[in-house]
Length: 168
Image (tube, rainbow, N blue to C red):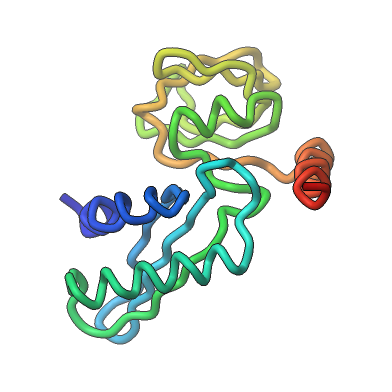
């Protein structure tokens, strides 16, 4: 099991209780300077604020200080996934249907590993994406990396969501 998977399993229950989900955990760097990067989302799918990052950072620091899963010194970075966010879980693909994404697969499908297009469906572990070459069905289990592409549609949706939150 990778250290990232171990770290996620260690901290996920506590963050879930606070209303957060882990998007991605990465431990970068070597013996000199390590960085533990934790990307979070809010369970209610509203945008992550600076205060959210501070709350999660304090919670993670407390857990990591007690459990001490990383040898040596490291810096903890907690961030939001941002507007051109990574797509990790099946729910991410469902949530962002209609937006443009780029997807990289572990295995080749019809001679290709990289796809770019509009997310048009997600069902039973398969993502449907409309590319310039036509519709492709991609197994989520074969996806190594996927993220949204910054587009006018995505920016407008983000603005609408932010405006709705400020009204409440």
